[in-house]
Amino acid sequence: MLTFIEALNWRSGLDIVLLSIIVFLIYRTVRSMGTWKIAAGIIIGAVVFSIAALLELPAAEWIFTYLSSVLVLGLVIIFQPEIRRFLERSLPFRRKWLHTESTKLGNMLIETLFMLSEWRWGAIIVLPGADAVEQWLSGGIEVDALPSIPLMLSIFDPDSPGHDGAVLIDHGRLSRYAVRLPLSKTLRLDPELGTRHHAAMGLSESTDATVFVVSEERGTVSCFHQGHMKKLESKDDTLDVIMKHFQHEDSHLKLVKSDKKRTFLLLEMFMSLLVATLLWTIVVLGLTETREMIFTVPIEYTPPPKHLTLTGDPPADVKVHLSGPLSSLMSLDLSELRAIVDLSQSHTGKQTLILDETNVHTPRSLRVIEIYPSSLAIELKEIREIEILVSPQLIGNLSKGLALESVEIVPPLVRAFVPYEVFSNGAAPKLLTTPVFLESINKSTTVFGKVVAPPGVHPSDERWPDVQIKISLKSDEPLQSNE
Image (cartoon, rainbow, N blue to C red; front, side, top):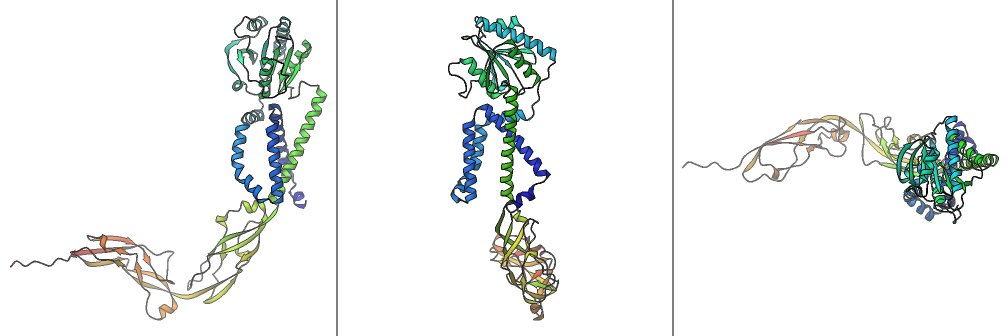
């Protein structure tokens, strides 16, 4: 609880608000698409995983961890229509209409719908909203005409070839007719309703378009919007729906009474805020939960004084026991984690160095509990800088008939640090080149190689210099006499 209270600030408030908006948009999209069964299954799976993680059940955690990438890909494929609609709803750029234009078009549609209803001519009229409808439509004949009652009646005349399709009125123009709509994927409609009603419901489930249907069998006028159907009993009701569509005052429940709509919308927003707060709390508590982990950390020795060298085989790494928030432990860059051992103040001989948290550099949120081992036994010896002759390391024999005439090393001498006891004995250590195999040489040549030094001997520079091995050959055949 203290961790949760400490995490509360203006950033966390903004985080919760943004998360609430995302939850609200996802909820409305899933609700209008009628995919609650799949969504409920995902929620149940997430709850099971959370319980398994809380109880630290290893088998369940392992299954969810290794199947998570496959599940994400599967969800993207399954919810592709919902994701498309969610992204389209994120920036709801809507059309703007002049009041006189929308009223004129609305009156024309009302007269057309009720004339078709009186004559029992079936019809579907689509008014697109903010969502793109093109990907949901198929077939049809493109036109660009000003809609009128005679034109609409001629299209829906039972003897007209395109009377079974839908008419699309976009930006106040009749753009297509004889269009086929997607059928509903839900069971919301009465099975006794015909194909026109199921097609209108299908488009309203996928987009925010308003679709009007005239029943050929019953002579009724209905409208569909965001997965909801409403029968229009009068011209006034129809005009109200059309004007709200053009004035963008609709929501996914605009076909119900305004007070119920407002109450239900506020309830949805409150529940979205509640779910977002719960999710945020789970994430924050999970990421700020204090955990302990042990890491193997390499040791980095700083150079000792110039007259000393580290001998033997000093330890190369230690184990560091760290404690801190889970998020910091999981995001820790191990390549930058080092145990620094300072040898700048060291002295000659064997000595024991104590390791503590000052030797390991970690983020502020992490704390070093212990280091294994807690001490290092090292030995430093005094060294002297001298010049040492480099000798060639020749392996094997030359081909028959060839002999060595000379071997020259460039540079012949290199400067190196030598342990004091070796220097005091008067016998300088021997430096060799990397091996040169004579069997592969059949003429005078120059070979490039490295310097190979015995233990305890180090270059005066950062590394040993490269050397050239100049090999001169001569013929080994005996001279023949003229006699």
